[in-house]
Length: 368
Image 1 (cartoon, rainbow, N blue to C red):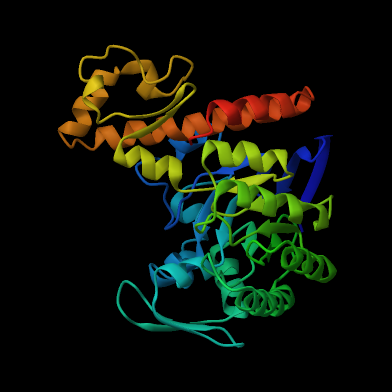
Image 2 (spheres, rainbow, N blue to C red):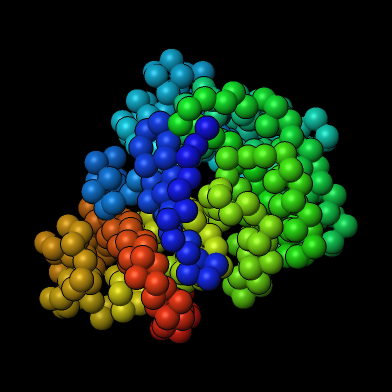
Protein backbone atom coordinates (compact mmCIF):
# COMPACT_ATOMS: atom_id res chain seq x y z
CA UNK A 1 0.00 0.00 0.00
CA UNK A 2 0.96 3.63 -0.43
CA UNK A 3 1.17 6.26 2.31
CA UNK A 4 -0.17 9.76 1.66
CA UNK A 5 0.40 12.62 4.10
CA UNK A 6 -1.79 15.72 3.70
CA UNK A 7 0.45 18.43 5.14
CA UNK A 8 -1.49 21.62 4.49
CA UNK A 9 -4.69 22.92 2.87
CA UNK A 10 -5.73 26.29 1.50
CA UNK A 11 -9.42 25.99 0.74
CA UNK A 12 -9.58 23.11 -1.78
CA UNK A 13 -5.86 23.27 -2.70
CA UNK A 14 -3.60 20.73 -0.98
CA UNK A 15 0.08 20.25 -0.11
CA UNK A 16 1.17 16.71 0.61
CA UNK A 17 3.58 13.86 0.00
CA UNK A 18 3.12 10.35 -1.34
CA UNK A 19 5.45 7.59 -0.13
CA UNK A 20 6.23 4.63 -2.40
CA UNK A 21 8.80 1.81 -2.37
CA UNK A 22 10.97 3.74 -4.82
CA UNK A 23 10.81 7.13 -3.14
CA UNK A 24 8.66 9.98 -1.85
CA UNK A 25 6.78 12.35 -4.16
CA UNK A 26 6.09 15.90 -3.06
CA UNK A 27 2.62 17.02 -4.15
CA UNK A 28 1.27 18.79 -6.10
CA UNK A 29 3.45 16.95 -8.61
CA UNK A 30 3.87 16.83 -12.37
CA UNK A 31 4.85 13.50 -13.95
CA UNK A 32 6.82 13.63 -17.22
CA UNK A 33 5.53 11.07 -19.69
CA UNK A 34 7.81 8.15 -20.56
CA UNK A 35 5.25 6.23 -22.60
CA UNK A 36 7.46 3.44 -23.92
CA UNK A 37 10.09 3.48 -21.19
CA UNK A 38 11.77 6.74 -22.13
CA UNK A 39 11.04 10.46 -21.88
CA UNK A 40 11.57 11.45 -25.49
CA UNK A 41 14.83 13.35 -26.20
CA UNK A 42 15.94 13.07 -22.53
CA UNK A 43 18.31 10.91 -20.47
CA UNK A 44 16.90 9.68 -17.13
CA UNK A 45 19.49 11.67 -15.16
CA UNK A 46 18.53 14.79 -17.10
CA UNK A 47 14.87 14.28 -16.24
CA UNK A 48 15.76 13.82 -12.57
CA UNK A 49 17.87 17.01 -12.62
CA UNK A 50 14.75 19.07 -13.36
CA UNK A 51 13.23 17.92 -10.04
CA UNK A 52 10.91 15.23 -11.41
CA UNK A 53 10.24 12.58 -8.75
CA UNK A 54 7.97 10.23 -10.70
CA UNK A 55 7.49 9.22 -14.34
CA UNK A 56 4.56 7.78 -16.24
CA UNK A 57 4.72 4.66 -18.44
CA UNK A 58 1.96 3.08 -20.49
CA UNK A 59 0.44 -0.40 -20.39
CA UNK A 60 -0.84 -0.35 -23.97
CA UNK A 61 2.47 0.57 -25.58
CA UNK A 62 4.66 -1.62 -23.37
CA UNK A 63 2.41 -4.68 -23.75
CA UNK A 64 2.84 -4.41 -27.51
CA UNK A 65 6.55 -3.65 -27.49
CA UNK A 66 8.73 -5.01 -25.93
CA UNK A 67 6.00 -6.90 -23.89
CA UNK A 68 5.54 -6.83 -20.13
CA UNK A 69 7.04 -10.27 -19.73
CA UNK A 70 10.25 -9.12 -21.41
CA UNK A 71 10.45 -6.03 -19.19
CA UNK A 72 9.93 -8.26 -16.13
CA UNK A 73 12.83 -10.47 -17.26
CA UNK A 74 15.05 -7.37 -17.16
CA UNK A 75 14.02 -6.71 -13.55
CA UNK A 76 11.04 -4.45 -14.14
CA UNK A 77 10.63 -1.04 -15.73
CA UNK A 78 12.81 0.80 -13.17
CA UNK A 79 15.83 -1.33 -14.07
CA UNK A 80 14.95 -1.60 -17.76
CA UNK A 81 14.91 2.18 -18.31
CA UNK A 82 17.41 3.09 -15.56
CA UNK A 83 14.92 5.15 -13.53
CA UNK A 84 15.20 4.28 -9.80
CA UNK A 85 12.43 6.65 -8.70
CA UNK A 86 8.65 5.95 -8.62
CA UNK A 87 6.71 5.01 -11.77
CA UNK A 88 2.97 5.23 -12.49
CA UNK A 89 1.57 3.26 -15.41
CA UNK A 90 -1.61 4.16 -17.25
CA UNK A 91 -3.89 1.17 -17.80
CA UNK A 92 -4.03 1.44 -21.60
CA UNK A 93 -7.73 2.28 -21.85
CA UNK A 94 -7.23 5.71 -23.43
CA UNK A 95 -4.73 4.40 -25.98
CA UNK A 96 -7.05 1.56 -26.95
CA UNK A 97 -9.66 4.24 -27.71
CA UNK A 98 -7.35 6.61 -29.55
CA UNK A 99 -4.83 4.38 -31.34
CA UNK A 100 -6.03 0.82 -31.82
CA UNK A 101 -7.87 -0.57 -34.82
CA UNK A 102 -11.18 -2.47 -34.88
CA UNK A 103 -11.85 -1.91 -31.19
CA UNK A 104 -14.70 -3.96 -29.66
CA UNK A 105 -15.70 -3.46 -26.03
CA UNK A 106 -17.72 -6.00 -24.05
CA UNK A 107 -18.34 -6.53 -20.36
CA UNK A 108 -15.37 -8.90 -20.29
CA UNK A 109 -12.86 -6.43 -21.73
CA UNK A 110 -11.72 -4.85 -24.96
CA UNK A 111 -10.62 -6.66 -28.10
CA UNK A 112 -8.46 -4.61 -30.46
CA UNK A 113 -5.80 -4.76 -33.12
CA UNK A 114 -2.39 -3.24 -32.56
CA UNK A 115 -1.74 0.04 -34.36
CA UNK A 116 1.80 -1.27 -34.96
CA UNK A 117 1.29 -4.75 -36.41
CA UNK A 118 -2.44 -5.35 -36.72
CA UNK A 119 -2.16 -8.30 -34.31
CA UNK A 120 -5.28 -8.93 -32.24
CA UNK A 121 -5.22 -8.53 -28.44
CA UNK A 122 -7.80 -8.95 -25.69
CA UNK A 123 -7.26 -6.67 -22.70
CA UNK A 124 -9.29 -7.37 -19.56
CA UNK A 125 -9.17 -5.53 -16.22
CA UNK A 126 -7.31 -8.49 -14.76
CA UNK A 127 -4.75 -8.60 -17.58
CA UNK A 128 -4.14 -4.84 -17.35
CA UNK A 129 -3.36 -5.18 -13.64
CA UNK A 130 -1.15 -8.21 -14.34
CA UNK A 131 0.83 -6.29 -16.98
CA UNK A 132 1.40 -3.39 -14.60
CA UNK A 133 2.52 -5.84 -11.90
CA UNK A 134 5.06 -7.34 -14.34
CA UNK A 135 6.29 -3.82 -15.12
CA UNK A 136 6.76 -3.30 -11.33
CA UNK A 137 4.78 -0.08 -11.45
CA UNK A 138 4.47 1.70 -8.10
CA UNK A 139 1.05 3.06 -9.05
CA UNK A 140 -1.23 0.81 -11.08
CA UNK A 141 -4.25 2.34 -12.80
CA UNK A 142 -7.58 0.56 -13.24
CA UNK A 143 -8.67 -0.28 -16.75
CA UNK A 144 -11.51 1.99 -17.83
CA UNK A 145 -13.29 3.22 -20.93
CA UNK A 146 -12.82 6.83 -21.96
CA UNK A 147 -15.65 8.38 -23.99
CA UNK A 148 -15.05 11.15 -26.52
CA UNK A 149 -16.55 14.61 -25.94
CA UNK A 150 -19.29 15.43 -26.73
CA UNK A 151 -21.38 12.36 -26.00
CA UNK A 152 -24.98 11.73 -24.93
CA UNK A 153 -25.50 11.35 -21.20
CA UNK A 154 -26.84 7.79 -21.47
CA UNK A 155 -23.75 6.65 -23.37
CA UNK A 156 -21.51 8.33 -20.80
CA UNK A 157 -23.48 6.79 -17.92
CA UNK A 158 -23.40 3.28 -19.37
CA UNK A 159 -19.66 3.55 -20.03
CA UNK A 160 -18.95 4.92 -16.55
CA UNK A 161 -20.90 2.13 -14.83
CA UNK A 162 -19.08 -0.53 -16.82
CA UNK A 163 -15.79 1.13 -15.84
CA UNK A 164 -16.89 0.91 -12.19
CA UNK A 165 -17.52 -2.82 -12.57
CA UNK A 166 -14.10 -3.14 -14.18
CA UNK A 167 -12.60 -1.18 -11.26
CA UNK A 168 -13.96 -3.76 -8.79
CA UNK A 169 -12.35 -6.53 -10.84
CA UNK A 170 -9.05 -4.59 -10.89
CA UNK A 171 -9.20 -4.23 -7.11
CA UNK A 172 -9.73 -7.98 -6.74
CA UNK A 173 -6.85 -8.76 -9.13
CA UNK A 174 -4.36 -6.34 -7.58
CA UNK A 175 -1.65 -7.83 -5.34
CA UNK A 176 -1.25 -5.59 -2.29
CA UNK A 177 2.33 -4.97 -1.18
CA UNK A 178 4.16 -2.25 0.72
CA UNK A 179 5.10 0.75 -1.40
CA UNK A 180 2.72 -0.10 -4.26
CA UNK A 181 -0.85 1.00 -4.86
CA UNK A 182 -3.88 0.92 -7.14
CA UNK A 183 -5.78 4.04 -8.25
CA UNK A 184 -9.42 4.01 -9.29
CA UNK A 185 -10.45 6.27 -12.19
CA UNK A 186 -13.52 8.51 -11.89
CA UNK A 187 -15.49 8.83 -15.12
CA UNK A 188 -18.76 10.51 -16.05
CA UNK A 189 -17.93 13.04 -18.74
CA UNK A 190 -18.95 16.60 -17.89
CA UNK A 191 -22.03 15.48 -15.94
CA UNK A 192 -21.66 16.38 -12.26
CA UNK A 193 -24.13 13.77 -11.03
CA UNK A 194 -22.37 10.99 -12.92
CA UNK A 195 -19.00 12.13 -11.58
CA UNK A 196 -20.36 12.06 -8.03
CA UNK A 197 -21.81 8.58 -8.57
CA UNK A 198 -18.51 7.32 -9.96
CA UNK A 199 -16.44 8.81 -7.12
CA UNK A 200 -18.75 7.37 -4.46
CA UNK A 201 -18.70 3.94 -6.08
CA UNK A 202 -14.90 3.87 -6.16
CA UNK A 203 -14.63 5.15 -2.58
CA UNK A 204 -16.87 2.29 -1.46
CA UNK A 205 -14.59 -0.22 -3.19
CA UNK A 206 -11.51 1.42 -1.66
CA UNK A 207 -8.35 2.47 -3.50
CA UNK A 208 -4.94 3.91 -2.66
CA UNK A 209 -5.67 6.98 -4.77
CA UNK A 210 -8.29 8.36 -7.13
CA UNK A 211 -7.85 9.72 -10.64
CA UNK A 212 -10.15 12.03 -12.56
CA UNK A 213 -10.16 10.61 -16.09
CA UNK A 214 -11.97 11.45 -19.29
CA UNK A 215 -11.16 15.18 -19.36
CA UNK A 216 -9.12 17.26 -21.82
CA UNK A 217 -10.84 15.32 -24.60
CA UNK A 218 -12.29 18.38 -26.33
CA UNK A 219 -14.26 20.22 -23.67
CA UNK A 220 -13.49 23.92 -22.90
CA UNK A 221 -11.15 24.62 -19.98
CA UNK A 222 -13.85 26.21 -17.83
CA UNK A 223 -16.05 23.15 -18.29
CA UNK A 224 -13.13 20.98 -17.23
CA UNK A 225 -12.56 23.16 -14.15
CA UNK A 226 -16.27 22.99 -13.25
CA UNK A 227 -16.20 19.20 -13.58
CA UNK A 228 -13.14 18.92 -11.32
CA UNK A 229 -14.74 21.19 -8.73
CA UNK A 230 -17.90 19.07 -8.79
CA UNK A 231 -15.88 15.85 -8.38
CA UNK A 232 -13.18 16.41 -5.75
CA UNK A 233 -15.60 16.85 -2.80
CA UNK A 234 -16.58 13.18 -3.24
CA UNK A 235 -12.99 11.87 -3.17
CA UNK A 236 -11.64 10.71 0.23
CA UNK A 237 -9.54 13.55 1.62
CA UNK A 238 -6.76 11.27 2.86
CA UNK A 239 -5.96 9.88 -0.59
CA UNK A 240 -4.05 11.46 -3.51
CA UNK A 241 -6.01 12.87 -6.46
CA UNK A 242 -4.66 12.60 -9.99
CA UNK A 243 -5.96 14.50 -13.05
CA UNK A 244 -5.06 12.29 -16.00
CA UNK A 245 -3.47 13.60 -19.19
CA UNK A 246 -4.11 17.26 -18.39
CA UNK A 247 -1.28 19.67 -18.33
CA UNK A 248 -1.04 23.13 -19.82
CA UNK A 249 0.47 25.37 -17.14
CA UNK A 250 -2.91 27.05 -16.59
CA UNK A 251 -4.65 23.64 -16.40
CA UNK A 252 -2.27 22.64 -13.61
CA UNK A 253 -2.63 25.88 -11.65
CA UNK A 254 -6.43 25.73 -11.96
CA UNK A 255 -6.49 22.03 -11.14
CA UNK A 256 -4.53 22.53 -7.92
CA UNK A 257 -6.92 25.33 -6.99
CA UNK A 258 -9.74 22.77 -7.16
CA UNK A 259 -8.05 20.04 -5.13
CA UNK A 260 -5.84 18.03 -7.55
CA UNK A 261 -2.47 16.62 -6.37
CA UNK A 262 -0.94 14.94 -9.44
CA UNK A 263 -0.73 15.68 -13.16
CA UNK A 264 0.79 14.25 -16.33
CA UNK A 265 0.85 15.43 -19.92
CA UNK A 266 2.93 15.03 -23.08
CA UNK A 267 2.69 18.78 -23.69
CA UNK A 268 6.11 19.92 -22.39
CA UNK A 269 8.00 17.21 -24.27
CA UNK A 270 5.92 17.28 -27.45
CA UNK A 271 6.04 21.07 -27.53
CA UNK A 272 9.80 21.03 -27.04
CA UNK A 273 10.24 18.78 -30.05
CA UNK A 274 8.20 21.13 -32.25
CA UNK A 275 9.74 24.43 -31.13
CA UNK A 276 7.17 25.66 -28.61
CA UNK A 277 8.66 27.02 -25.40
CA UNK A 278 7.06 27.78 -22.04
CA UNK A 279 8.60 30.72 -20.16
CA UNK A 280 7.73 32.84 -17.15
CA UNK A 281 6.57 35.54 -19.55
CA UNK A 282 4.41 33.24 -21.68
CA UNK A 283 4.79 30.85 -24.59
CA UNK A 284 6.93 31.45 -27.68
CA UNK A 285 7.78 29.60 -30.89
CA UNK A 286 11.53 29.40 -31.47
CA UNK A 287 10.94 28.93 -35.22
CA UNK A 288 9.65 32.49 -35.58
CA UNK A 289 11.99 34.80 -37.49
CA UNK A 290 12.08 37.33 -34.65
CA UNK A 291 14.49 35.03 -32.79
CA UNK A 292 17.10 34.89 -35.57
CA UNK A 293 19.36 37.60 -34.10
CA UNK A 294 18.17 37.42 -30.48
CA UNK A 295 21.08 37.15 -28.03
CA UNK A 296 18.87 36.60 -24.97
CA UNK A 297 18.27 33.25 -23.27
CA UNK A 298 14.84 31.65 -23.53
CA UNK A 299 14.02 32.53 -19.91
CA UNK A 300 16.18 34.68 -17.61
CA UNK A 301 14.88 32.86 -14.53
CA UNK A 302 15.59 29.32 -15.73
CA UNK A 303 18.62 27.18 -14.78
CA UNK A 304 18.35 24.55 -17.55
CA UNK A 305 21.25 24.07 -20.02
CA UNK A 306 19.31 25.70 -22.86
CA UNK A 307 18.95 28.91 -20.87
CA UNK A 308 22.38 28.83 -19.18
CA UNK A 309 24.46 28.13 -22.26
CA UNK A 310 22.62 29.14 -25.45
CA UNK A 311 20.90 32.11 -27.04
CA UNK A 312 17.51 32.22 -28.69
CA UNK A 313 19.33 32.89 -31.95
CA UNK A 314 21.31 29.66 -31.68
CA UNK A 315 18.26 27.60 -30.72
CA UNK A 316 16.37 29.12 -33.66
CA UNK A 317 19.28 28.08 -35.92
CA UNK A 318 19.19 24.48 -34.60
CA UNK A 319 15.51 24.13 -35.45
CA UNK A 320 15.89 25.71 -38.87
CA UNK A 321 18.80 23.36 -39.58
CA UNK A 322 16.76 20.42 -38.21
CA UNK A 323 19.52 19.49 -35.78
CA UNK A 324 18.43 17.07 -33.03
CA UNK A 325 20.11 19.17 -30.34
CA UNK A 326 17.33 21.74 -30.74
CA UNK A 327 14.46 19.43 -29.66
CA UNK A 328 16.66 18.01 -26.88
CA UNK A 329 17.41 21.42 -25.38
CA UNK A 330 13.84 22.73 -25.67
CA UNK A 331 12.42 19.54 -24.15
CA UNK A 332 14.82 19.90 -21.22
CA UNK A 333 13.81 23.54 -20.80
CA UNK A 334 10.08 22.81 -20.87
CA UNK A 335 10.41 20.04 -18.30
CA UNK A 336 12.47 22.38 -16.11
CA UNK A 337 9.81 25.06 -16.46
CA UNK A 338 7.08 22.63 -15.37
CA UNK A 339 9.04 21.40 -12.34
CA UNK A 340 9.90 24.99 -11.37
CA UNK A 341 6.19 25.80 -11.58
CA UNK A 342 5.36 22.84 -9.31
CA UNK A 343 7.97 24.00 -6.77
CA UNK A 344 6.43 27.49 -6.77
CA UNK A 345 2.95 26.02 -6.34
CA UNK A 346 4.10 23.97 -3.34
CA UNK A 347 5.83 27.00 -1.81
CA UNK A 348 2.74 29.20 -2.20
CA UNK A 349 0.65 26.48 -0.53
CA UNK A 350 3.08 26.28 2.38
CA UNK A 351 2.87 30.06 2.75
CA UNK A 352 -0.95 29.95 2.44
CA UNK A 353 -0.77 32.37 -0.50
CA UNK A 354 -1.76 29.99 -3.25
CA UNK A 355 -5.17 31.38 -4.20
CA UNK A 356 -3.77 34.86 -4.91
CA UNK A 357 -0.89 33.34 -6.90
CA UNK A 358 -3.23 31.10 -8.90
CA UNK A 359 -5.67 33.85 -9.82
CA UNK A 360 -2.81 36.14 -10.92
CA UNK A 361 -1.21 33.34 -12.96
CA UNK A 362 -4.47 32.41 -14.66
CA UNK A 363 -5.14 36.01 -15.59
CA UNK A 364 -1.63 36.45 -17.02
CA UNK A 365 -1.59 33.14 -18.91
CA UNK A 366 -5.27 32.68 -19.75
CA UNK A 367 -4.43 31.97 -23.41
CA UNK A 368 -2.28 28.91 -22.55
